Image (cartoon, rainbow, N blue to C red; front, side, top):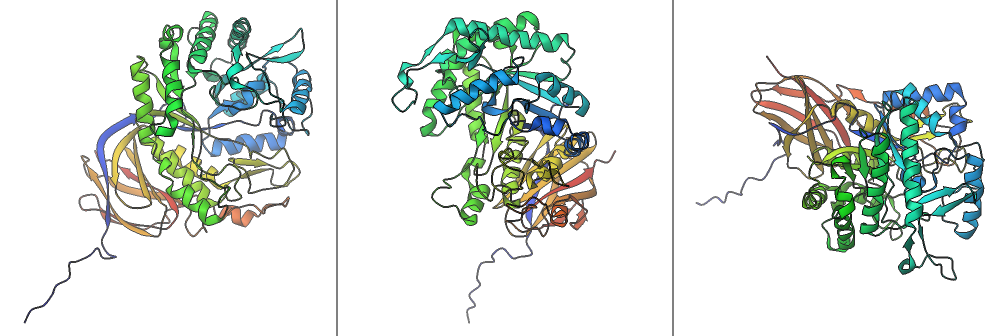
Length: 540
């Protein structure tokens, strides 16, 4: 009699191993948190927020609670029409004229001349809030005081439709030199007025290869030459500044033009003379699918959770090779714009959108090349349009000035808070081979934090330590337990929030049972769609 024995498959009781190794990947900056934000509200209702003491103090309290202590200002392409000492009325009057020629220019009809805070007001806010700032310098346009007009540093002929004809672009180098001196004046003013301790970095422009309405769309060699001229003037007034310049790289074939652009910048002879003054190079990271083809929640969920672009390691490794080729290996990489969701999807502010962004943040945390990240962006992108809460857009906070809940957190705010609290000290090597899951570990002194993301159904894992002497379990914190995938704390199209739902996104302490001990490993069941942190203390 023969009995056919079926091979034993993996039972539900089997545990997927998660291993933390005593091997350092990188150190997190002790000066500030790993994840900051882009302000991107410079042309929005800032004055209304800053002039209301109750709202202003609530805003600062919220930032401190979220451990957000770095802000990139003015944020994104806003820098192309930011002039630090020009009265708002003069800037906006000319922007209004430009908008008639090009409706895509980021000028909202509802903006009034006094809506924008001044450069000094922003830096005073940073001092009060304990914020470090990355200040972007305008490399795209110059404000000609004699003409009382915004003048592009690279001029183009335009077609009948008003669209720029790319091949006709010509840089006005005399104007570039004026703009470089103007940037140096901004650095000098900040130093003279005792803001040097507030400004951590000075950044040369934004996405110089990009085609935003007021962007110059420089070639790589042009931007390299421009950056050299800016640095030359800046270090005359303060040679101690840390400078960030634009970069980009992606190993995929369709990004070949971006890589060629990046190499041209790095290899520019004029810029190479100032390599020692370049602290960091940028790499912006947006992960979104084709929302025009399928705007369903299912399509959004698949993109936010499983888009292969979420694996940033190959991209950053490739970027590093470009820097090494130009003897810029000492420079670090700032992912100072990122978002893992459709820009204007109705689901961007759902819990699943926050989970997608958590994956991207953890991926960058595990990269030895990523020094810092700035989420895009701090304020809800469309909050200028009206005073209602909306799911559409993207941001960490929503400001609704007529509401009894003026500073509202979107789900991603909790993710940033949890990660900034726990990604400190040294990032350690981990191994967690499971579909829809990801792990990061960080050691700060004698405390190890193991961060586990589970983007699928509940998982049973065994947490092991390799090279450590029996770390003792301390406790856990988690986000997302029993929170529906499509959950958002806001009611679309209304001017009132729902506080009980907002409370669901509070960090839950010790909501996950942990069994076992260090010698044999710890058994943990990770709930579906959750971000959790497990704390351990190293024994003497």
